Every structure is written in structure tokens, then in C-alpha cells.
Image (tube, rainbow, N blue to C red; front, side, top):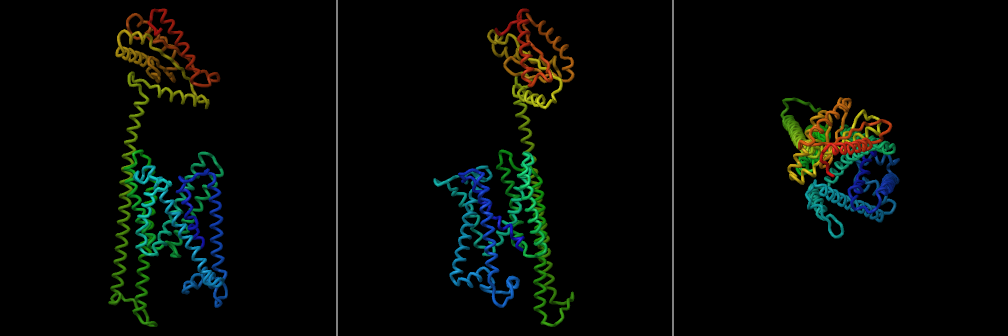
Length: 527
């Protein structure tokens, strides 16, 4: 039983992380707070346990007999810690213990209210909750978020005191899930960074939470003080509402940040179905036990309990059991249908958003990577290609390639004499000429009148013939009013060139040499 309730000790640590936005000290100090909190909590638990077994009534031979008989005791004897305090200090001990418990209750309430309000404040900042909850008073308090927590907590007092234990049960299971998820996330992150210490702590945390989860399931199935039916029902309703509310979150998620992982939803639906079946089993078991008690009360003590199908006294019990069974089956089926429908609806909406995002990215990529005037690659596409080639060069995986740097001659003259519209047409004609010769290579427009061609594969092997044909075509255009382009070609030399830019620089120098040649032939240049 002590092992089963141990996760309760961890509930409350989330107050630190939820309130992180208020921190004004280095994040590294958190480990000291965690260690101190764990040590203090452990000592408090140990103190309560020791106090509970330190004193017991004289009629018991040992504390184990006393603790084992608590179910049959009433009054202060049924509360070991209070009995020990009263025996040692009288009423003063009771007052001290009550004040300590009152401090515990108030600190827990204040901590939960603070952490939840800060969590809502952060969610509002992430545009999950409405923006009105991201507001602070002059003292830095998220008053609206705090009031929201108060409103959500208000109905609990009308349910009864036992509702507090239900909420603690749900929080305990939630803590197991959340700490397990946090540990799994830390483990995944640690693997990318190859951080051994973080890998160990993440794996250890995940393993511990899995063990606690298995213990909770086992003790629930065994009926050994597991989750009561009310807690199971709260968890089922809360999870279904979570699926439905997530749809609202996705609709408000204009940044398309949520809904990418279907696995979480499938696990949640499976969890809902498991809890629903568990609730059905316990509900039918409870009704059966009540019927047996009623039957025992009907028959006088000592008389045999003869179970006859046609016994008129059995009919109400059978009908009651059948009603519960039918209600449970319909309830489980309804919950499963609603959950599955919510999952499919969320998944369909997520897919729709993903397709819209892909189309938008495709459109943006086309705009970003395509030069609108010539249809060749843009300057952005060239920069990305250069970066990729540098990576391959650094890795030693760059194959054979060559860079052709081109410059359209006489563009300024065309703009000055015929206008910029004619100049644009002149640039477009230059791009078409380059692409018509280097058909299988990537062509980029990197400036107003500048183009770069990246030759690989077949055209790299035929680069000299292609360049020779290109130059003859350009020379034939001189004096005809057609586009004239200077071009310089340079090969990548493994072991000598440590970057793409060095190859580009050689080609650029050769392009300027070619420009002077064309000028002597009568071509108009920008000079």
C-alpha cells in the first residue's frame, strides 16, 4: 500500500514548473529546490509513519496488530497519528497536529492555485486559451487566470468532501502519465545530444513511472484500494472532454503547431476504453455484492440460501443487475463511439490542415526558389545550393561538378536607351539562351544581369563542348541587337578547393576575361 500511494508524494512538484515564468534565478537552481523538496517530503512522510506506529492501545501486542485492525476502530483510535499525539501531549498534541495539517492544506491550495493560474497564463500566451487570460496586475499576478481556476474549482464543494479524494486520485494518475511523458521526452532529446547523464535520468524516470502505472492497474484490477469508481468516471469524462476540447485548440491554432501525432490520440482512446471496461466490471461487482447482502438479510441467519430461478424474491435482484449491466454496456459503447468519433474528426481536421500547410509551403517555396522574371532558380535557391555543396565538400562526398558564371552584357545600355521594360525582356532572353544550352543543369539568377549554372553528371562531362557552342552563339549575336552573355567556367578540384565559393571565384574571373574578349569583338558592356 505504501508503494501504491508513493506517487502522491510527487504531486505538487509541478507547481515549480508551472510557475516558471515568475522565476528570477538561474534554471540550474531548480535542481537544488527539487533535492530539498524531496528530502523534506521524505522526512515528513517518515515522521508521520513513525508517529503512527510509536504509540498504540494497551490491548494490542504490537503496532502491526493495531494498524491491521484500523478498519474496526472508531474515533481517535482510528487515526494513529492523532492517537499518538493525544497520548503524548494531550489536547495540545491534537492542536499542534491540526495546525500542521491546516498549513499543509493551505500551502497545497495556494500552490495549486498559483501554478494552475500560471499554466493558464502561459497557455494564453501560446494562443491555446483566449488572449484575455494573458494579463497581469501591477504586482505581476495573472488575476483573470486565477479567477478562471477559482471558477473551475468552485463546483467541487457542492459534490462533497469525498470529491477531494477523487481529484487526488485523478491527479495521481495524471502525474504518472505526465512525468512518464516528460521522462520520455528528455530521453529522446538526450539521444540527439548524446548526453549520457540525461539518457540515464530519462530512462530511470520513464521506468519508474511505468512501474507505478502497472502497480496502479494491478491494484485496481485486484480491488486492493485502487481507483474508486467515481475517480474512474471522472477520468473517463475528463479524457473525452480533452479530445473534444483539443478540436477547439486546433481550430484556434493558426500556426499549425498541434495535431501532428495520431499516436497520442490512439493511446488516449485506448485508455478511455480500458477505464470504461474497468468501471463496468467494478460497477457490476458492486451491484452483485449489494444483492448478496440483501439476500443474506432476507434469509434468517442459519437458514440455507437456496437460489431458485423462479423464486419471486430473486426477480428484483436479477432485474437490478440486468439494468446495471445494460446501462454499463451502453455507457461504455457510447463513450467509445464518442471518443472514436472525436479522434477521427481531429485526425481528419489535422490532415486537412497539414495538406493546406503543404500547399502553402509549396507555393511559398515556388515563390522563394523561382525567379519570377526568367523562371530560373532564385538567389535564395542559389545560396541554399551553395550551402549544400559546402556540406558535401566538407564531408568529402562532393562529386565532379563545375560552375559557370554568366553576365548579360549591355543591360545598362538597353535600359538607358529603350527603357526598363526592354531591359527585362533582354534579361529574359539571356535566361532562355542559357537554359536552352544547359538544359539538364541547375540555372540560377543571382543578380540583375548575373546567372550561375551548376553543371553535374552528363553536362559536366560535356562541359567544354557545351561552353564552346554557347560562346559561338553569343558571338553570332554581336551586332544583331540580340543578347550577348559573358561566361566563365571552372571545375571543382578535390583536395584543392575547400568550398564552393573558391570554384565560383575562379569562374567569375574567367567570366571577366571573356567579357573583355567580347568587348574587343564589338559587344556593348556596362562600362
